[in-house]
Image (cartoon, rainbow, N blue to C red; front, side, top):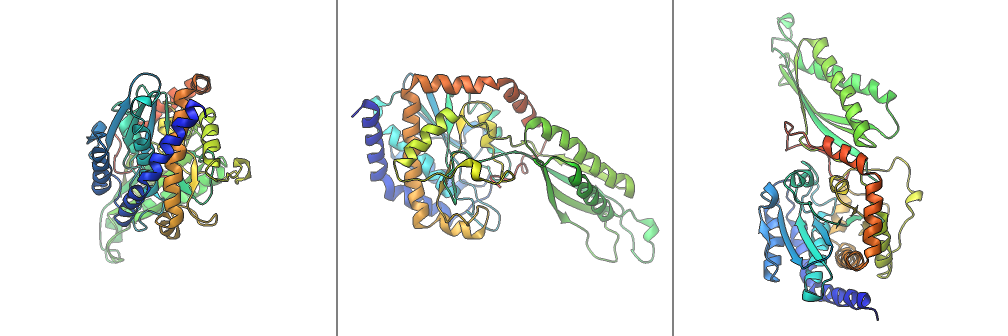
Amino acid sequence: MSDLDALKRETCDRIDAMAPELIDISHQIHAKPELAFQEHFAAGLLADTLDKHNLPATRNAFGLDTAYAASFGDGGAEVGILSEYDALPGIGHACGHNIIATTGLGAALGLAALNGKLPGRIRYLGTPAEEMGGGKELMAQEGAFDGLDAAMMVHPAGIDLETMPCICVSEVRVTYHGKSAHASAMPHAGLNALDALVTAYQTLAQLRQHIRPTERIHGIFTETGLAPNIVPDKAAGLFYVRAKNAGDLADLKVRVQACFDAGALSSGCRAEVEWAKADYLDMKTSFAISEAYVKNAETLGRDFVDLAMLPSSSAGSTDMGNVSHRVPSIHPMISCAPANVVIHNPEFAKWAGSDLGDKAVVDGAKSLAMTALDFLMSPDMQRQAKADFEASADVSRDAVSRAYNPDGLADIGGCGCC
């Protein structure tokens, strides 16, 4: 048995020994879903567990109340292992972030148990607000990923995939301000904010006919007025704008802004357009690392679906994309549900807390830990990952420069892995 194989076996044995604890933590987080930036229970539980295992956690890390960080190891390359733990409004952990939380935790604790035998360094990060707000981009602005040689996490799904197909997304809130009046007695005295919003929506619908197949615009009305006999003086909507890459997204945002302006011009109302503080970038997968993840997961009985089999339109968004344009990264998917059960569905939340979800916790932790060891012990993999990343470094620098809007809103942004 090689030194690498021996370290993998020791790490996996440690994760097996911790499995009941990891599964219990997954169930606790699953039973108490918390929205973005509000994950105080989950972050506290995860950080307390690190402390319990003699791995001191820094709380309130990198400027976010519900972020945490822990580091260990000496010399060599440094790998970041990430956990997420926020939930969705109304449907709880229908994205399985309880599993993401505990796969990251298990991998970190398994590797930490190697003590002086760890052939490098690990930075374990708790990253809040993936479903909304772009927590990883906000943490990146504070240096959370600086100096890393690689970063990795695993996301639950209905199938095992080498990577999650992702496109960019920006969220925007538009509010129209008009003038109220009696809708029957004096309609001429009013400025109808709802008319402005409806006009903008219809203009966006027309725009959708003339955008690329890789682009998306979709949204909802969140405020429409108080009563039918009052001309609405305020109306608001929330929209997602998606594109294949950061450049295309920037161009599409200009066209969307024009639609909002059209609503204001046609109605005489004032448009207040607020874009998110953090745009979510496309996923730049380091296949030199993800190939190792696949091999490791296959040793545990995982069976991967060929990415080429997926519909070309099948893509979500995640702020892990923002990390991937800063450091070689992977974001594989791990099955915890039947293939016909998709994420962001109430049915998926049930599976995230099931026996299959529990198996994903343990298998995911092992697969991440083994892949981290592969990277730390393979100078060839490190060189290849770096070379592949540098091949499109200019594109990444441009993408990163566009992803953060300091004047934007932190309580919107992206839509998580949806």
